[in-house]
Image 1: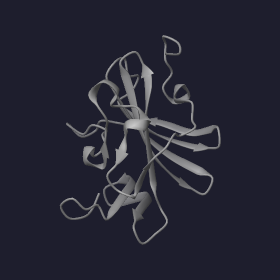
Image 2: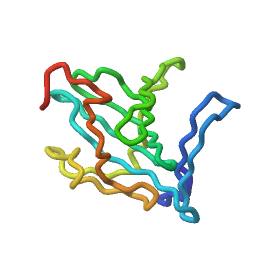
Image 3: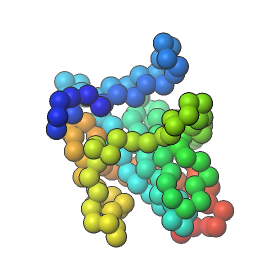
Length: 147
């Protein structure tokens, strides 16, 4: 995220290694690019935060799982329609480098139902709250069955 205090003027996603960015997507007020976000239950006590962007018919979906029995901390899924082209787990090659999203981008509702989509509010027009339309169990299989 870029911008001054209280103002977010750009959001960027970069994939690759330092000095070798393979894929980049930036949302700014002066372009039509936007990010989208939602939160879904994955297993008892686990929640998956999802942030994505679309490039043509390909969706790049970033995930972070917290609480419960998360099968992975975070990852990147690449999808075309209902077909999963890639579902990679985050590698923790740098100590202390954990997947996570900037908490100042989204405000959640009251604590007892804080992770429901209808209680989420984006703090920037560059990130819109909406449902992915993707079955989260495709990316995060739940050994305990549907919730």
